[in-house]
Amino acid sequence: MKTMTIPNVAPDLAAALEAEALQRGLSLNQTVLALLREALGLAEETERRNGLRRLAGSWTEQEFNEFERTVRSFRETDEELWR
Image (tube, rainbow, N blue to C red; front, side, top):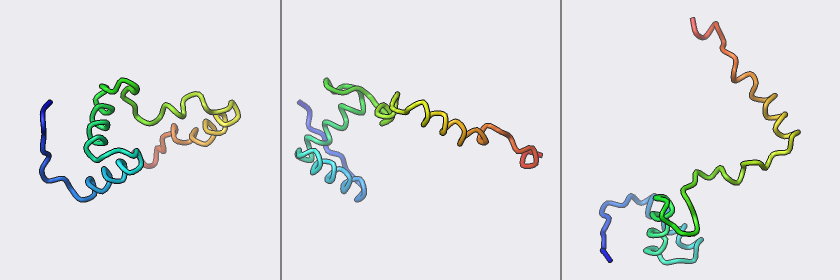
């Protein structure tokens, strides 16, 4: 197996990786490898995801209708703003 070194890891990224490792109960190295495999779609138990799958199909008809009513105005163009 190949050994890699990643220089210049920003402090915020390092902290996020350490927090993720703690949450997963893995070493930092195991966590980085798992994240890379997941992000590249190489993890056996997972596939590439954008975090939205948990929302798919989870709304009731009433929730969907309420959402549609709420965002309806977003589809309208304000002619005054586009002159």
